[in-house]
Image (cartoon, rainbow, N blue to C red; front, side, top):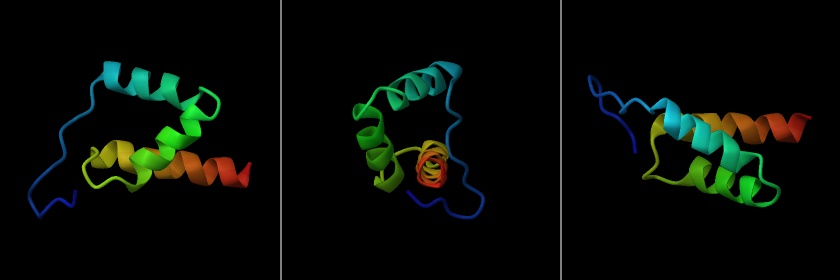
Length: 61
C-alpha cells in the first residue's frame, strides 16, 4: 500500500502494537508473521516497516 503525497497511513493503536509484539515473539509463528507483514501490500505501512526492521535485526543478531 503506497501512500500518495499528502496521504498518511492510519495510526496503529497501542493494542495493535502489543498484539503484534506478542505474536512476533512466538517461536516459528513469529517469523512467519513477520514475513507476511513485511511483504504484504495490504498491511499498514508502519507495521510493514517495523516487520522489515525486525527481520533485518534477526539476520544481524
